Image 1: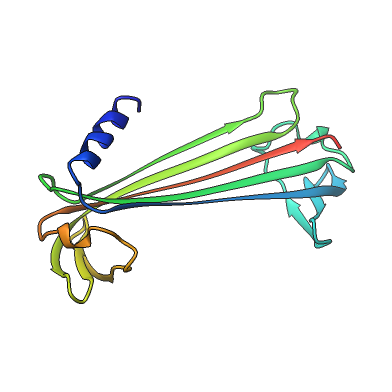
Image 2: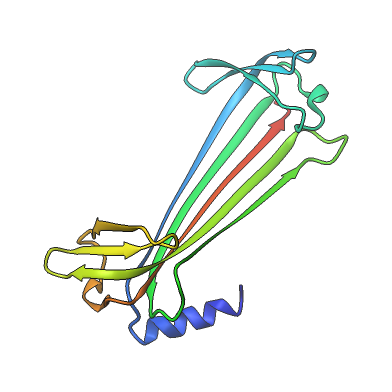
Length: 177
């Protein structure tokens, strides 16, 4: 990753094609109102007083340690990066998932991360109407309207490659009050 940063910076100096990154982070806290260890159910009360009961799967280690009054903190991260580069490759798609859970004996916690990448070719483009037709890895095409906020759209050409990287992560932890 460190090696990729200078290359990206060099491209920017050359006036590369458009790119955008959109990120959202949401943090939700809830208190444990009821614990049903036998049936692996938690009744949680949210910050606005809403109450929900959830079933906790066997993959959640150390469930027996959760008690009434504990705080559940959930963080959700969503990021989409879109950029355009000169093409030399065929459209492609890939995905990488990762899950990590708390070690035995510690309070329940875990994180799940999913990253997918799709590369599509610019098959057609109308700069005046700000539309682009992309062909994906399975040969299907889609036409999209490009927002006026995307700078350097006039530099995108037929045959360029559009890369979309989508990352989602959820982290959940149980904490004593």
